[in-house]
Structures are given as structure tokens and as C-alpha cells.
Image (cartoon, protein in one colour):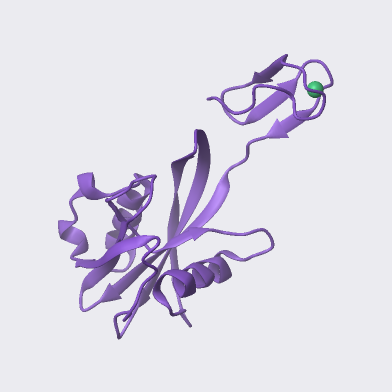
Length: 170
Ligand SMILES: [Zn+2]
């Protein structure tokens, strides 16, 4: 993976990535851990179906995703998910049930971020009236048993659907 060409501390090009997470400079011993980023996704059930969003942006442009996003520093997964839901769909959840997690990768501007995606479930009684058009092209209600997996932006969503079917749904 291409990440840094030079050591951010001393400028040396004698830097080595272990292929997993550790980048080390041989000149000054500067070490950077490219640790996983945590992300939270909502599986929102409405009328027996799950609310998906169609992505406007890369990665996964034009494909289906679950509402949610990266958790900020000093934020709980639940608070991060509610912040993202508020931004994307204009509402927050009072209650949510943790379903489980799955690893994922997120390629953004040439850098691959390894993430751990946390899935939360909630039933909603009304559909959002608006959504953030800078991120979402459309909202789609889909029966989780009938989701076309090739239409999903991220592989972790496959696992999220599995967790949903196993734990909660029907
Ligand atoms: Zn260095």
C-alpha cells in the first residue's frame, strides 16, 4: 500500500511498511501505526424492510450502503451513529440494538483504511422526509432476504445482513 514516500519526522525515504499496520523509519525510528478506524452503520427496519442509501461519492459510488459513518475521536459508537444519522437523514435513534461487527476496507484518495464496522439495529415508524443529497442519491427500502449483494458498496454489509437475519429479523 502506498502511504508515505518520506518519513514525516525526518524526511528520510528509508521507511518500511510491514504490510499490515506498522510503518517505521530506519533513519530516526519514527513509527506510525495505521490502526483500524471504527465505523457504525444502522440497519433501520421499516415495514419489514431495511433502509439503504445509494451513495453519491466514491468509494462505492452509485452502490447501496447503510446509513452511518466513521466514529470521531472521543465519541461513542452510538453517539457517532446518531451524529451521522442526523447529518444524513435528519433524525436520531433513542434506542438501538448492537448486532455485531465486521472488518472492512475503505479506499479514499489512494489510502486504504482498514475499518471495523459496528452494526446497530432499530425499528423506525416513519421514513425520513429529506436526506443529505451531497452524500445520498436515493433512499431504498429492501427486503434483507432479497438484497443483491453485487449492488452493495462494502463487503462488511454482507456480514451486517447476515447478523441481522441471525439475530433479529423474522
Ligand atoms: Zn525518520
